[in-house]
Length: 126
Image 1: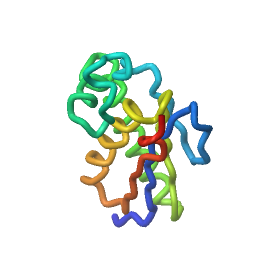
Image 2: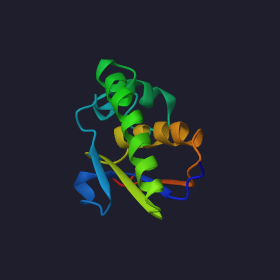
Image 3: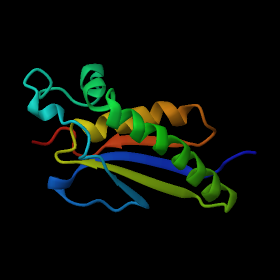
């Protein structure tokens, strides 16, 4: 089965405004690298930041549930010939946790047949 739905993933910070998206996922429950001095200046693209946010029980369980759920949604939208599906992942500032999740999902979805675009709306904002 060939999928035609284009997937857009993006991270954002709630403090910079609520996004327009088909699905918004709040990841403010994950451990926040902002409060760790050696991690604070780095983004969720940094493996150390991603490990801090996702390499714990909450992060692992979250991804364990999110991956099959997202895969299911995308297949359903594709089977109904939907052209676009946008998923926004939000944390407080849009630099650490949401970025780490989007990067994880980018790698996860790269293994699937969906055209994919991913970006980080607020990563460079203070």
